[in-house]
Every structure is written in C-alpha cells, then in structure tokens.
Length: 147
Image 1: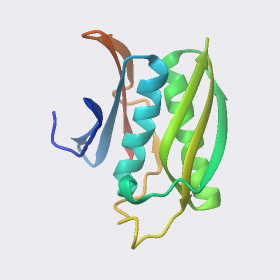
Image 2: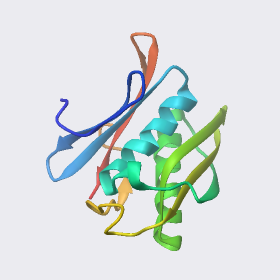
Image 3: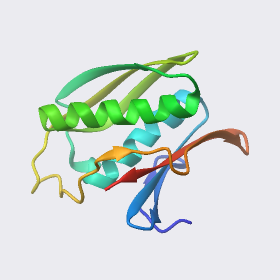
Image 4: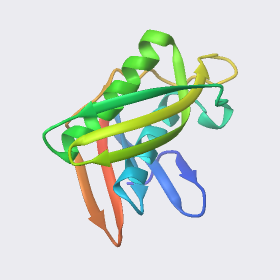
C-alpha cells in the first residue's frame, strides 16, 4: 500500500502506510544501516514535518538485540524514549550496525508543535508486520507503530 507520506532524495527513502488504527513505516536503503536510518525518518515523519526540524542538537543511541528485526524495534523505541524524555524531534539519522549491535546518531531540536506541524504522537514501535529483508537489490525494513 502506498497511501502515506514519502521521503525523496534520488529514490524513495521511506514511506508510511495505513494500518487499522495505527501506522506502518518502511525504510529503504542500499545498506542495512541506510534502511534503519530511513525507517527512523519515516517514524518522525508520522509525528512532525521533518523538513521543518533543524539539526541543532544530536543524541547518540546504542542498542542491541537477538536479531535484526528486534534491533529495528529497539532502535526506534530508543529514539522515541529520547524524544519523550527530552521533548526532542529528529530529522537526520546515521546508523552503524555490527552483528546485533547498533550505534546511531540522531540530529534535531526541541519540539515546537506549531513550527514542526505536529501530527500524531507515536507511543512505540511494535512487532506487528515487522520485517527486515532484501528486495530488488535493496534493504527494506518495516514495522507498525502504535499511535
């Protein structure tokens, strides 16, 4: 399904899709790291207009998991925890994955509901429709987020 917002550079980097009362997110990349970073951009595009989020501050996030699917959920939920605690929103992400460990950096700023055009609050990334796969020569990662 392709009914949501899309992030573009040269090709589609992420997309959102409707799922019952929640929202699905997908990140694409030529590497697994790029797909995870783009999934984070998709996550924040659900909450705010990320094109309006300046990269004034950065936060490091380190997570580990038993497999790549769980690593995606841990990454997204760790970002949401930082956002919730510090009232930050992010618009740029870098990820490094070694085995089942992820070291990421997110750049953004404090939430301004008016300037950032706040949409909905995301409570968390879920295991529903969770997938990390290669498709047509690129990585595709996805899950449904609870709103």
